[in-house]
Length: 252
Image (cartoon, rainbow, N blue to C red; front, side, top):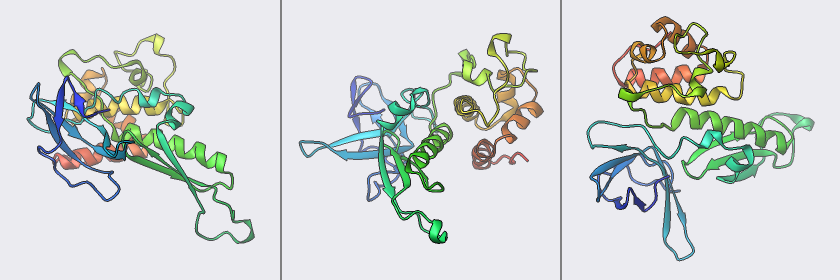
């Protein structure tokens, strides 16, 4: 989480902001410079909240860099997915509403639909398919975890890179770096898959969308990594969006 002070210096939010703050203070993409270290921080999303004294508090997904090129990482966000449900809920603003659409007499008349906004990142997830608010909240929270994995990047230093345990767990057994202590391979239907998915996306973003380069770091063939990416629709779409932005062909 970036605050008014970061890296021991004041973050000047007036420098290099790419987009204006939206009406609700969420959804900014830009960067600012830390005056004391000349390091740039790239913002994927920002949420501004009023404080007691009338000032504003900044929450954002940020990344440190030297000022050259886009850096999608954030050294302060790698713990969101490791939080327990109740801890992650404490970082969220929850709203309930009536779901619209067909349903007749079985349509729930109460405000059972749930919308969650993760304040540190501004990411929003919602669920409305169940008549139970409790069930919808659980579904929205699971979707929020997936969105965090897809949208929030953590730093990867390629020259010293070692895949984290959560990434090793989703790799196929044929990976040469996957030890027996990693246990059975975790698939997309396992709730823990989002942890590995986030770590995999961190690596793929670090190598700028090159599946072949990422595969080398993971001790597997390009084809095997492609099959892993294609096994989950949201993961496939995230990788293809990055590859398209880099002028690469999408995976099919």
